Length: 231
Image (cartoon, rainbow, N blue to C red):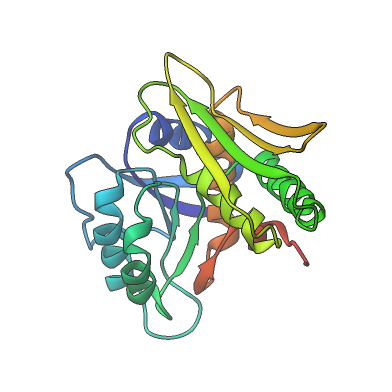
């Protein structure tokens, strides 16, 4: 049984709470917006779906509760996006003390999509006549634009060897489900790849699986690590 601390009790936090038992997790506590983490709380892994400006403080609080040696006594799954400007600080605090799995998107389907996009970028890279773009659309309430997933896709394409400019654009309107499209446009044809989320519960399921996997580990991890990508 993995004992989890839920940080952020908005839509995602409530879904994590709802589905925790189905993933062999027990909720040890819930931290709502504006509340600090009580050092007396006992938990294995925190799952943070709060706000970007609070991530650094949350990681610091979890790290302060960790033991100095052996398997990590505390870990944190970061599902919040928009905090990457503080990446170096967050990593420095977490280093060698706790386990961290940070992801812009916990959908298992999206992470498979990411591998497909990498392969496509690698194949189009030698062909200068093809330009690349990423477009993402979300509901009007989503704050960060472009989304963390769009930036992740762009970085993956560049890492795969696509060295030309990659245009990234965003739409925020109504209740649009999270949709990410990658395109490669040539002089005579165009290829598009699209991933669409129909139910945000997929993110909660992925985060809970990440928490189970992360328990007892130290270090910095991604969804690729969890899924065992061997490349």
